[in-house]
Figure (tube, rainbow, N blue to C red):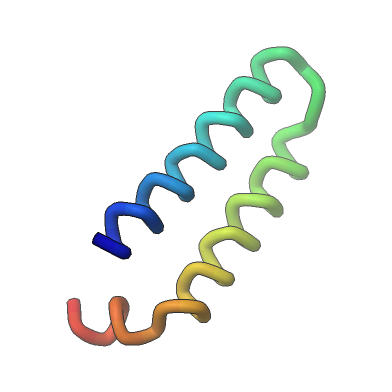
Length: 53
């Protein structure tokens, strides 16, 4: 169940970022930085998930 929540949070962040990109509110650089931060924090918060797969 936790994996579904993590995946949902990541997808939600990516979708919000894409919408902001389409509206020209943020730049590609800002979007990539946010995606990298979300990915790294998710990996650090749940290291057992990455090791088991």
